[in-house]
Image 1 (cartoon, rainbow, N blue to C red):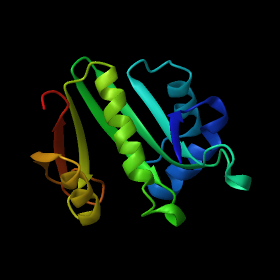
Image 2: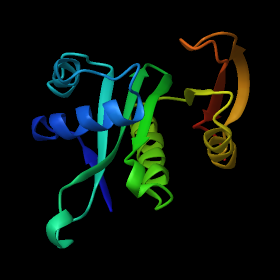
Image 3: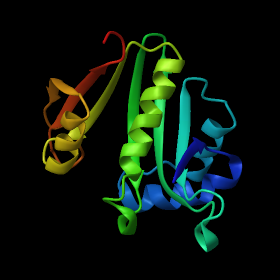
Image 4: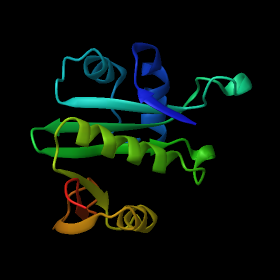
Length: 156
């Protein structure tokens, strides 16, 4: 498994994964192209795929992360793993790469938001050093609460 910066050739795979994981709020191929082409200067897209030498699966996108960095604050806007590939460490690899990217770009903290009822994701982020700093009531279209979490990127 490797994580790298998304390229134009990844747009269809990312868009398909967006529809799978975020059907009500998927980024369109056009929007993804703008980001990948560098026309959204604060947004970076990372993709996870099989490393070279992995047979027929080599290069296949099995996950992605969208990270926005504005000065000292980075935001993990979304992280997605293909349904048939969950629990294989892909989300961990994408999160680690997102943390590295944020640090490399000078961010001092990484924020994210997760649905309160997504217990698995909340636990994943807590186990990764994130703490809850706020809640956004009725944030999602279906009325679910959003939990805002943060991880400091500086210090020990």
